[in-house]
Length: 100
Image 1 (cartoon, rainbow, N blue to C red):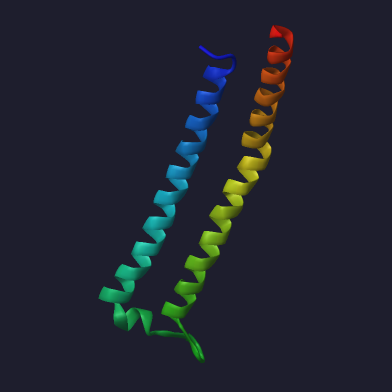
Image 2: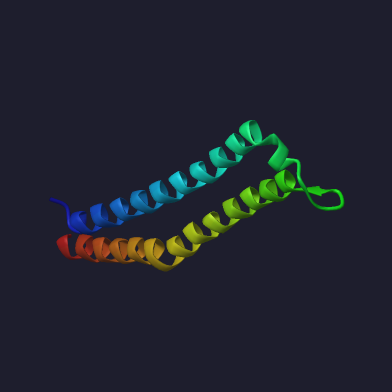
């Protein structure tokens, strides 16, 4: 097995797990909104403020949620994934230099 193989598998599995959770969360929010639009039209048309319906407010919340989960992923990648990959690269270069 290649050096760092287990660490690489662990980091990749962690990335896929987080991406899967965030994807499922986004799908629930988005399809929940679509189902509300389809089956709760009177509720979605309720005015919250003059010129602002509940549907428009929820649509904006769906967009904001997408930004938030993107930020969660970017923050995780910057704090966990990128440093782990950099560490693995450094150790692999060091091991390759020792082998030659």
